[in-house]
Length: 192
Image 1: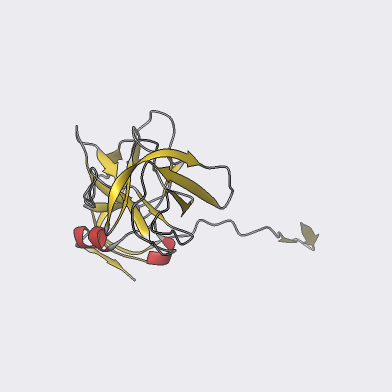
Image 2: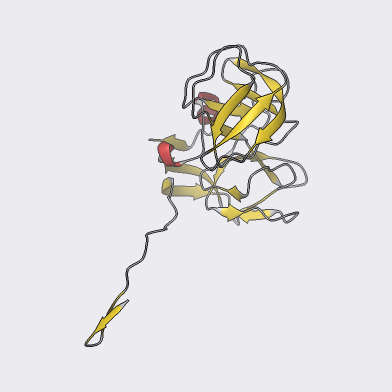
């Protein structure tokens, strides 16, 4: 910090949060409560797809972006940080039936390594969106109806309260991973 004749100049690193929602047009009035019961991540990110759960709560449509190519016989998949997968969830991709997650290694600062009980059976390119399937199939476990409107920390057993947007524009490269099934379900959300 440098002060000269009443003028103060402060220099610091820019640590603003990267935003993904460009335009917000219509939300669910009053926001929604999001269950944290099955969340494996530390934060709910803006733009996360949300679906209806039980008891009036909403749940996260879990996704992850592959950061490296995976072979057709792989049982480990390197994914970007920020996902909510847990051991026991089903890990799937658009044309690959979900397999049970047996381990998640989070020690690397840049990525997580998800291990599944059996290979997904197809080569997957870096950038592919993986998602939680309902079973040993390629169907979404949670069908999204809205996206989270802000970043929120996941704290213990405290459910989250967040604005939920049903019509808006999202910068896809800044948002949590989505695929064509998720985009189709989110009829009012435009990804650019």
